[in-house]
Length: 102
View 1 (cartoon, rainbow, N blue to C red):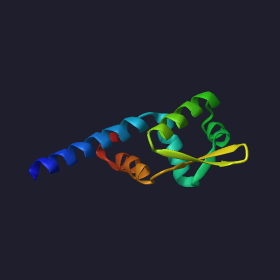
View 2 (cartoon, helix red, strand yellow):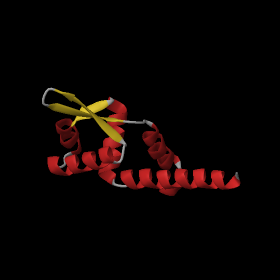
View 3 (tube, rainbow, N blue to C red):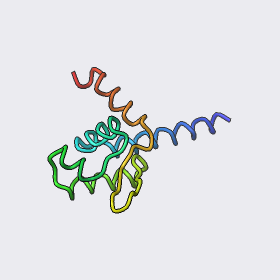
């Protein structure tokens, strides 16, 4: 049964690498921080607060949604993005607190 544990560990490691790659961009980290503080936001609010092009923000939002980090809620013509799991923010906070950035 040790091989089952190794396989489970490999799957978890692969998933961890997948999530880290998905958030490995300064704008994505900023978006995650914003969503962690506001629960959900629409694209207009995000790109205005980050002073970035709407198309660029949309690209990052779609990418993170495709990877399961974000999801959406529709309300009329508006689409609101939110974090699927706030643990992603915890990972970013952990990196901030580590010696890596100091």
